[in-house]
Length: 392
Length: 188
Image 1 (cartoon, helix red, strand yellow):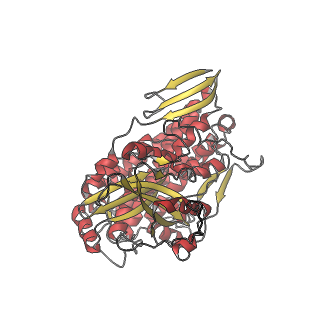
Image 2 (cartoon, rainbow over the protein chains, first blue to last red; image 1 turned 30 degrees about the vertical axis):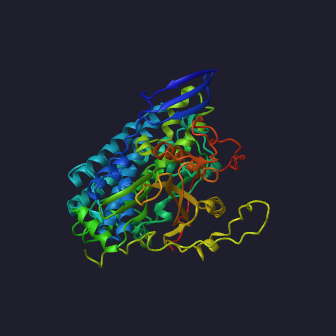
Image 3 (cartoon, rainbow over the protein chains, first blue to last red; image 1 turned 60 degrees about the vertical axis):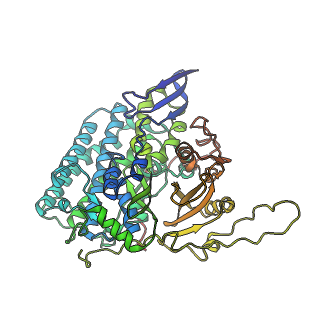
């Protein structure tokens, strides 16, 4: 037996973390995760912030899940203040969330394929596609700053018609580029032999630990907020008839069903997690395209949304209670984000994020036990842990 | 705002000051042999005074001695405990008392259970809801809480007690298809 300690800074850990491994020869007999190096005290800062400042801080919990975290936070505040989000704002929030999910899944899968030594162009194509999505979103918004605000989006985040058409076209191109790579990866026998049975999380464990997102769905836990508790835009989209949207001005293929497909696997292993993310990224591209295709008119946010402090303070003061608490939820790339907010007209008193990666952390150590040391980078990458989200 | 294009807001959460569902005290048997054992909690429908109203957030304010049986009732009901929070001391209260909030969802309906508990003897939910193990350890560090009978000691290795141990064997048949896609459910 030997002990191997990796981290807190190691090339394939991507984020600071100590990984203690008990090795028996080349086999990992036990693994323990020691996080805590990424803790920034953001929840404490949020307690001292104004409503406007809190919005910016919520987006800084994690760069990769900024939309999901901010959405959950905004939903909680909007419940507290009884703010209504215009439908166009809801649709554009959906587009932003799906773009973020597609980007995150494509990047995570590229990292996993690299870690597994997958030959061929799949990893570079996925990574380049994610970069194209990010650039297109920056073109639309004019900056990389989160456009989300209480009651919708900031007014400058509205999408012009030519930008909408360009984005639909780009989504179609990315989908056409990614689809053959997804097929190539899922048909690759050597990759399947390496990843099937690697770092297994059993369905009973997933259920007991209440795992969220792709890690849970890869262990047959068919939970997805977009289907189970859809927000206004997802509900409206899914209520639409399942007719294919005709080939429009963007010249892309019909988007097909309006339903959100929840992709699940039963294996709970690295291959299952890879498959779920690959198929979900295609689904996200489709949903974003569908929402842009059927984008309703109107405002993207409430009047006065640019003055967040005043907007929320007035709404909360109007409700008369000294302190109000609410729960916000959003389906992020790494699973459901739960955000608890308590506050008054002056600002938040408590903000807590319970993210998908935080839920996944306890499952990783036991799942790594039994891996060959050479497979460890792929096994770890398959969980797509985000320690920024987990540690706040 | 164009109200014609605006969606209905989600049902706002009722503030604890505004509405608190009263939890009926159970009728306990009288006995001379010390305090009676905790009575088994009744079903959630009884606790809530009716079936869970779909989508409408519900608030329960309960004394700390009722938390254990109540958590068991939620676990029996298959509820998910989404988050566990401590409200900072905003009300005048003794420094050794904290306000704990358990945020459940039952059939996608949020139910918040609130209690005030001694800081050094908070009831642990991690035994029934292992997903809260790490969260309770966070609260130990952040607020100086001590949980009563946590299934995992705070200084224990993180993998202890929450892994695959004692899991029943999987029932995945060998010939099960690798990919499966659940049909979407109809909208309510």
